[in-house]
Length: 192
Length: 192
DNA sequence: GCCATAAAGCTAAGGCTAATAGCCTTAGCC
DNA sequence: GGCTAAGGCTATTAGCCTTAGCTTTATGGC
Image (spheres, rainbow over the protein chains, first blue to last red):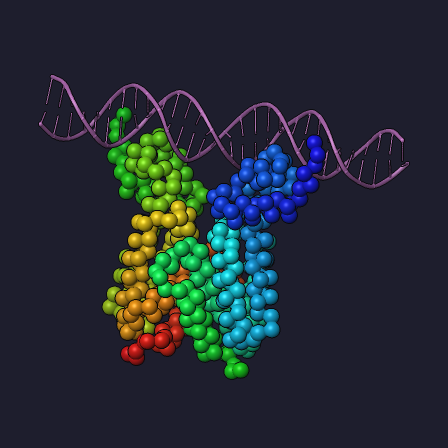
């Protein structure tokens, strides 16, 4: 048999394509194998943990991708401009890959590698918050606030919860202003 | 055969018990049937659409429950007090039923009944926002902001995303302040 | 150039799930 | 007393994940 030249990375690539095209429910080993031109059990040579591990790898990859996207977006901005760029980039990523973003919570629960990816993302937030002079505990609360806001907006948007006619871009604008003002008045923050 | 005395409501009850105890992944027709003391196919007599419909019913029930919880919490409060009560109640519900809350996005996509439940929830938000004099389009943006924030915080909390030692209650306090201030300065809002 | 070995593929089989089809029994009503 | 409808059942099909064990391919050392 001609080798398919598979690798864990390639398997995750196929998984992401499947999710993007058909949603998280469509992520089955059978479908990935078909896409890769391989029999289903062969996948275990590359993803030993089976379906749960594949979901885990997909989540880690997605968070890392998102982190790169966010880091690139805030580059060259600081303070309010950085917050605005961050929120816009977050929403843009979720809008560009709605099913992938929605699939994130499908990862198995306590996972060190995914936690590490989350920390890398949060480090981008910390970098933005340093512009406001926030460090230590208050930076943690502020980072959580940023993340909760960005995630909540992205999550509800991709889930189709915003059915009314009003433009979601304007909602994001309002949300950004609230956060920017909130950070300016954050305990321990310093002015520009 | 002695009748099991099942009903759609009872099936959803069992489903919620299962989710609360073991998570959304454990919600299978086989498990529900075992719990109800019935063979799997018998469930189709009560939930004709099978597993997708059961997930849908679970989501509707949960959103309605949450809505009741929120409505009760804001009762007797207005403006900042109402916002604080709302956010606290939202977080409390998600903390009390973390797996149930996490299972919400599993509902099948475009569903009128679930949309209607979402509208009932949003009506509670609109009621709170009327205390700030917000109506029309700006109320919609403000409601989305409230919901995104509450959902984002609840979602990340139940997902275990907040690993650091800092108290999440204090995070919620900070978040509440940001929102309260944001609403005070909202376009079209009037003072107390 | 050949051979050993590890990696990467395969088939086969077992066990789980959802879902459909068709049958039987109970409960309640006329 | 019998009809009807609802609520059970078993049997079956189809699809999935997973493990076990075999076969082939590629590669690296001699």
